[in-house]
Image 1 (cartoon, rainbow, N blue to C red):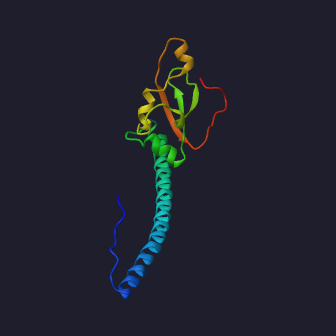
Image 2: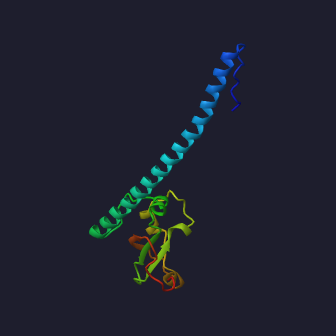
Image 3: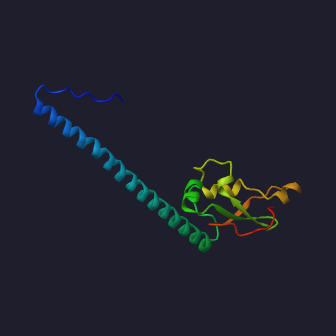
Length: 149
């Protein structure tokens, strides 16, 4: 955007008044930019808190109903809310595994409940089987420290 051109007034008093007003406008831009940054930071903090509450609610519904709830929040909301680990279990051999949602190749707009049909157990895959994973819950940190199955 091209800078705005202010024609210089002919009289001295008008030139001084224009100079004062331009100075006030320049000072106001800094104040408004600072307020904007502050409001954006507050907004992002509120969105993170909302995403965290959304996943706590989703985990509770998963626990009470015992199956993935549709619709679920997205991968992007999970990582934003601090729930970047998905605890799953193989439906065939019952091996538990933790999946880091940030490392998945799926788009960040993918719903978490859609991952159940896409995640597979490596141990069962070597045996020629391809059972779906069972979603257990989302966690803020990795729960299992053993090698992935």
